[in-house]
Length: 624
Image (cartoon, rainbow, N blue to C red; front, side, top):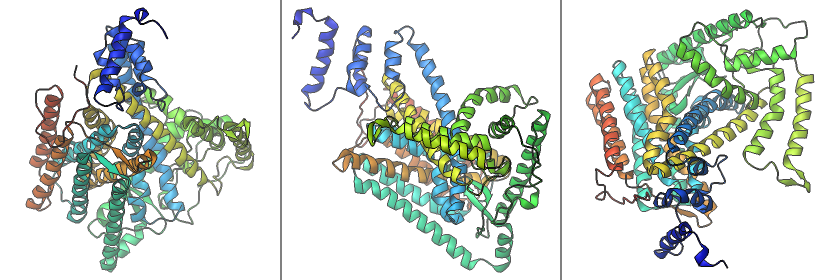
């Protein structure tokens, strides 16, 4: 044992922190946020020795980066780097979900033969809300309940006020009262149930499963409603819907997008016209994109196939996978790879504005890496996205990426010297050679849809990995800035996961599809809160060994729940009084409501607005 007189004074200080932390509760662990009580030259050692500061799930040690690589005078530069990295991860999260995850789910829905309604509220809705759900999954095992509560309710408040208000201010429109009332009532029930659970401070396995059961009840209501509408549908409208054979799938957070599926049809007479109009726009836009892409490929010396004619845009069992004559010459493999990457990444457009050109070059490395790792089967793309050398490479890169990202690559299989990645690499090489030699360049094989399942796994691993990094980085920023997890969740994390919805839904509204974008503002957050809490805490409670975990929402939790309830009740009452016809004045009211919420949040966080009177408020944030 070392002599106490030889200890540095900082060691006494750190030891005192540990002693004081354990006086109140011997079982209480020293919290990483206590680093703010230490002098500057002791912070680096503290974050390296305190268990609460060490995160094995993160690939980057953010706290070590901030406290050990930067001094107090230069730490702002480190924060700037972290903020830039956070923006990059938000972009990667959205890109992975929208361009790689959702197309795979669309193909899986067709392969499994799911109906439009069932696929829309299950497998495709899961893809649309994947960033929010995987953020919750990443935070629950590490006790980030404040972050989960703040993000799920914060994004819900942002969507139901800012996005919905922006859509309403564009132009008035008639709301589909049946689906709006259904989603709003279920959402109000989900918010109340979530607040009650967090108010108690503990959630059991069965309470977490209750969120999933409520979601299943919602699915049953949607399907029964569709069935009743179908049986009551007039014959002429039903024929009109049958001629289109189109299925509407919700985009991110419930937004509807058109995709032709065999055997699917529209059954709501009040939405048939909008759906057929949306299908026409989708077909025209897709043909224009294919023709423009073909011209760009030819201008670069790349042979491109002619676009599919309009009559072949509806997909069924008899739709050919390739139109036009196949090339008789054997194409160059590098030319094939170039065509496939250009189709995924998109060619640079010199005539675009400066901002678009800058965005193109900034996103190019990210999209290129994703394109080389995650396969995409996309029914709206040329040849459904088939690229022989690229898909062959996916047989090798995607499985290897998945096992290394989940940190199981070095697990011993059968013999201690035989690691898992050896076998994955071997089978990947065999599959690579088979795809390259046994398939045709411009003709997708009959088993092409298998790559959708491989892409699904790759996209899930990518999204979860990025979401986990986002959670750990936000925690580091919160410790450094002394901001609560609730504030970071309901602002930074909620904005990052919802900014794509804002751009997409407002753009759709400007194109004349206001009802579509407005409906997404209530159906999407409902799905996210039910499965975000249900799945994440079901896994967390089972993994705890006690079938329960302790949770809290922080001092500001009740305020965000109150503002969200005001937003939902305002929409319910106002639209009923206005005869389910929106007005710009109400859209402005929703926007002002959110800015009022932000003002209250900032005042409360800086200590200018006491929140002790709120029920169950408690703050884990240390204010030295």
